[in-house]
Length: 199
Image (cartoon, rainbow, N blue to C red; front, side, top):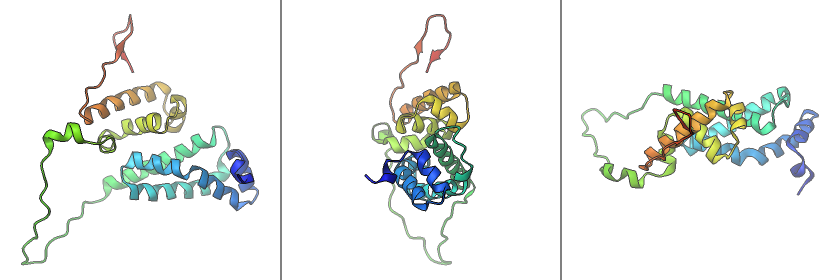
């Protein structure tokens, strides 16, 4: 293990600010797999995820001098990544669906037949597709909690929302994910003296 590989993130940031470009390379190499994995889970598309992961590190490069260290670098990096993912999701919503029109007078060629597997969806849909089908705010919370394995407090800092909101989104996201996968979500546990289940 090289000296740069063993340095903590904060030390690498200090070295980068002092003019050591290799320290930033070490930061990227240390965190690029996690950033890419987060982008894939949120966006559901490997190509978009690759582009957004690159955008994330370009943003980090531009803004690293402004990182004050009030939170852990990984928390800040997750927030930058999520902002880049949000930007891509907004762009995707505005992107028009393109259809190639056939040449004038030409008969359109038949495409591949599309088989109808509606009855089998519950048993065959995979977790990634199911995850992509649930609402964005719930998907992001579930990805951060269950895929990235972050504690609720870190997720709250990344998303800039209260911890209670994170818990609610994770719970609702898990229920939506279970339904999307054709599973029966577990009923929330009722605590004595409460009228609502607890996530």
